[in-house]
Length: 373
Image 1 (spheres, rainbow, N blue to C red):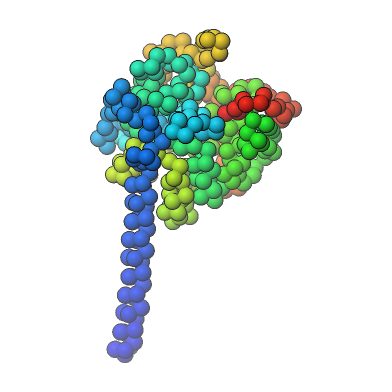
Image 2: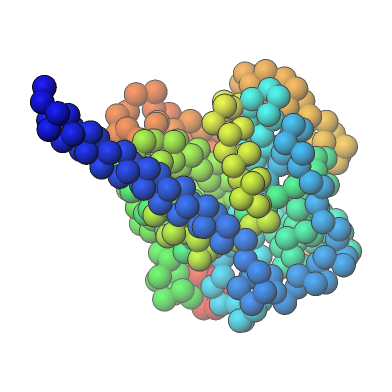
């Protein structure tokens, strides 16, 4: 090999190395900048009108040191029809619990009509807690479950749509026909899905997680939301999504607010990568629910708050395998791998009740001015 050939090889190799290093710098810089912008401040914060009162009435959540269990409150809101600067009620509330010691991840979905004590504001449905600010919402959810909630992630319909579209959609099994129309929204959020395995984009995925017009209403909807969130998490772990992460974050950034710092996110990502999903639960479970009428409206109550806290701790401490009775209580569902369109290990979601397709597909229309959540 001549010296000239050697120089050519080394020149090409140097260019390749520079290109790789340049891409790596761009990739990680883009991710850092997008993550850093997820926490909104000042006029950009969705809580700008309630933040000061929230911080005075409710102390900051406990800091996560990186070794104990960390709990994150996920909130999806419906901002239709609200005034500028007003904080809408949460349409869905979930708590993700990560245990860095046991390497386990648990997901809890909280029924939004659960009637609880909201610190500083008396008793109300838990979905109203966020209207007083994120600190109040975290404290309320933590008090219900008996665990400290250190972080929150807040988004709306558009944030959910953008996330699903940014990851390329989700291959998912829709367990039955789903139909619903609403004149109040000028049919912008009508639901029209067919039973079977299909590719859901952002709009159709939103229809799926919002549907509640079957025999079990919010009970079955919370199960669908947990199952779909698992599918999104699986899709985010694919090589394609990881490579496209800067673009994914750029798409969802305007619609998300959180108190997670970039450093916290890196630590949580490391914990999540090393952990296994241990299961998802409805809170409160069916066997602990009561019903009351407050001010002419039906709400869900917890028969024994201390028993509920013990129930949550038992989930953390026991093996992930559950009895058939517990599975029935939780209305759980398992979906196929989101990155594959095969029907291997497919399971249909029943919502804990046998519902005919005729009942599920019956169209209904809200009264004028009534919002479908």
